[in-house]
Length: 393
Image (cartoon, rainbow, N blue to C red; front, side, top):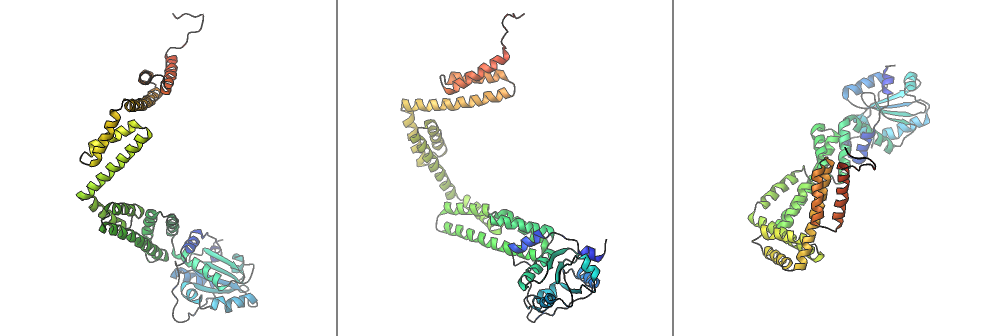
């Protein structure tokens, strides 16, 4: 059946629009006029439906009967409440139907209780089906949800919900990207206006972080300022403040004094780790870091301290022997990994060569035992055992 009543009765979900309204109740909030609104009730379904289509407005249909007590209560109360009538008058095409005068429509809508209030889009899709009397506050909420659903496209509602989720976990780059798309394409629709508002809020927070970073710079705390700027760029990517922070950071990074400060900081950090390695007995690691500091930062005082630590290790045979053992252990582990890589490619000769190097490099160690075991396995593949009693030709 393809009658207007059957099309109106087609139920469609309202999950995304309802989520949008609950997440940001300011969406679709009607502006209340100064003078009390006058609601012009329609009484003919076909005429009201055409008007809704022409104007792009949702329908509010109240189905009742003349002798229905709660129908009269609904009409005298919520439907005339000043808090609700402005939206009813300007945001809907209101329609009252007496079920006795429109039995086929009441049947098509499956009305079983009076009053029954139906909220539908201009295309006939039902967004709310309310049986019985309903208080003003609940009816207003249902009406606002319907307005939001009608004026918000599916993609915009979906993206807005995704943006809300991103904001909830402080994923500002994703939220900003989604909100920018909504504000650009949804324009003056409620969801577009709300997206612009939230974008403005995020921009203010990001601008505050940028201002804090600039204050650090003005106080001479250049490194802290750079860290704050880098954090602003990363956390609020997509905002104007993040772009400004990136430009400011680039300017600071190019300053000779800042470059020198960064070199000094890296050298100090590396020397501190080298000293930790020394105290923990990781002498080979300590030597590598000291050599790097002495070579890459030779003009800094840290290079002198690194050279002194190197001399201490090299001048002590016991310490140097321990460093050599650690280096051999590291090298043996690498040769074992290389042997496994060759073996997986079927190149057993190369794998065996690596295993022999392990056994020669660190005999009587765990690595040597592993190498011997793997070498035995490889040799058994190339020289299979000859069964007893049989002679090779």
